[in-house]
Length: 345
Image (cartoon, rainbow, N blue to C red; front, side, top):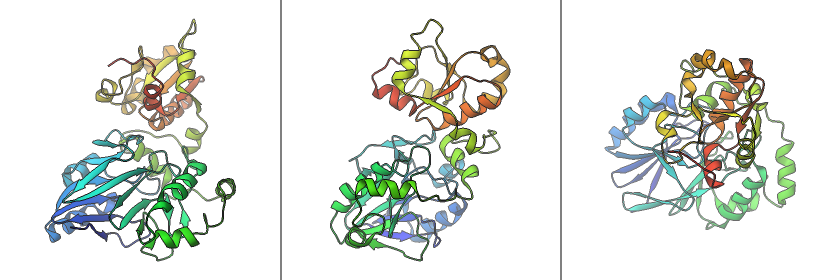
């Protein structure tokens, strides 16, 4: 059996149905089209095994908790995904079974820290890592042009030339390409060094997506816009970040910072644990808890979440509320644990 690929949206923003026998995986679904996906699965008499995302999107709303229930399938993303509604965190090189076929997970950071490509016999879903005659932008928080260059030229271009490329976006009416075509003719990469690529990406000056304010923080946090009063993206970008080692050193001071953990309660005591002494203030409760935090208004605060995205938004909210000495734990508890620092569970 060989996986067949069906693009479902027929717009610039692509969602794919991967089918092996009677089993299916839905990749990069768009929230507004969930009803059409349910109808398509029923029409084809398919069992939806898994929901896959190639990265945290900034241009459309990803699935909500209610959408996941409607589709009745677990949501899988790379372990660097900031979202608390992910059911399965994926590792580079992990293999997923779909019917009798195998899908390999390739971590390809650059567009976002959690970007992955899904490789299977004859094809690869490249998300926003590799586009047809292009590549995903790298100027969002967490973007890294050098990492993206390495992921594309060092990994994706190592695939067989006839491997079909299915990107998450295309704005020129293309539906698919091949690795051979992109390797030889992609204007972003062809005959361009790593340094030249980084210079190119730094100078693009692209406008922000129309829906970034609405979509990105909702997708990162798992909360809806009516549940949390999200700050403007400009405020989030201005938040100071501190490395895990830097925060550990700060905690050794005579007057250490107050650690505010804005994850969900189950995350606080979950596999990543929490920083000893941290205060749990879930993000959707932060605004209501501000009066109780007023005693810390002159203290140094460090805000923490899983991957550093939710906490950046929460830190901006605290800044706006008058807390002047607020920092964000860069890359969140993932970085804290990776650094081998103490945790409580």
